[in-house]
Image: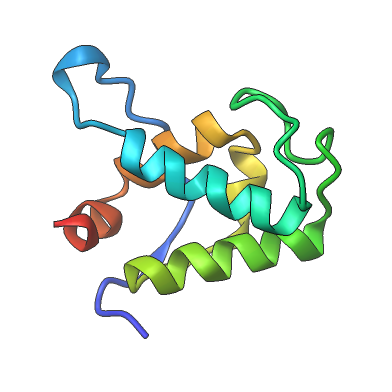
Amino acid sequence: MDNFGPVGVASPDHTGHDGPDLEPLRAQVRSQWVDVLEHDDFGDDEDFFDAGGNSLLVAEIMAALGAEFGVRVELRLFFAHPTVNELTGALAAHEAFKAAAR
């Protein structure tokens, strides 16, 4: 499915205003959450599981994001970064996502 290898746990890239525009990726992550949770009543810093999610829904989200970007995304990335903002930063920091977003 990909030429990049698996996307593992990465630390969010806190690059501030000089870094990449994360809004398009954040919007995609948030959209996946809304699709699987079937509601949008959560903040971007709210834990997925507190918003009503479960591990089966995590698998759906990560498969959809991986397919959208053409990379394999490991589930542990989500568990290490369980908010929209954290997951967005972790995905943006990974080289495979940087290459796929170009």
